[in-house]
Length: 93
Image 1 (tube, helix red, strand yellow):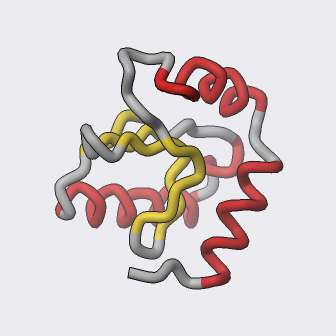
Image 2 (cartoon, helix red, strand yellow; image 1 turned 45 degrees about the horizontal axis):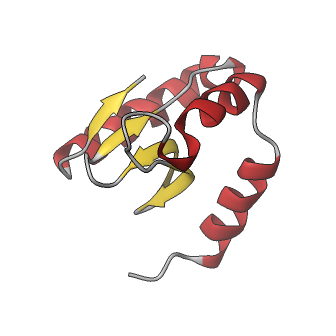
Image 3 (cartoon, helix red, strand yellow; image 1 turned 135 degrees about the vertical axis):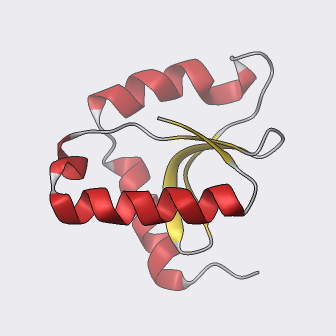
């Protein structure tokens, strides 16, 4: 399935503008440093961009921050989690 251009551009922009917490976690996850598992950052899954994703384990890691503190964002995250869970992924946040 081809990733829509707008999501691809957004995920690339998010990789360049990561938070301090994302930067620290990425240092620990990159290059298979954590148990030999390969993680991707700002990965597109369907219409969503997740912070970190391990394909082999179908594991999503999301870091919450100020952007997630609004009611609208909270509702969107809840819908996103429900959808991705139904698709067979596990979420760690």
